[in-house]
Length: 179
DNA sequence: GCGTCGATGGCA
DNA sequence: GCCATCGACGCG
Image (cartoon, rainbow, N blue to C red; front, side):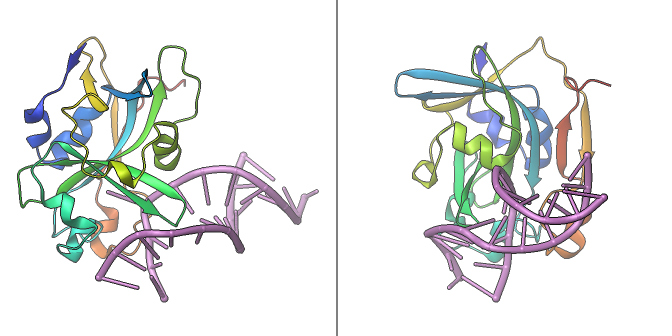
């Protein structure tokens, strides 16, 4: 499998979100490797997107989104759950992709259906905010032999985002879903 | 099986 | 005073 490099993350969120479907998220933690195939993502497309945290401007929390693509944006929501995002595009263009679901691979048996569960099982917290995706602790592998079946829907949990709440910026891979 | 609701903390 | 959620609970 081929580890994806920095150029992959320099894409816009609307390109990266579907491109991530079917790829393999890899986490190295305490000497072990955890791998899972990404099945669900959401695009947050820039400061004009009212659902995007960066629409609030440059703050302590959103600062990392203004970096060049290729690092993680991890934050705490509802005081309970961590959310894993990939910062993408170029510097000062605050776009990101939220990783919402995956299927564990190898002999790893966990439920990764949901962004909170995914971050928890991958043992990611706000300590990992800004982590480079080109390092060894967290990265993505391509899988040229896998063909996702992509469906677009509205994003979840952003009813406050006015006209942006209905944009079809959530991407789901149905490849593995039984009829 | 589905709707409702409370937890809980960082942030502005 | 919000939240890019989850899981427990009550229903019947």
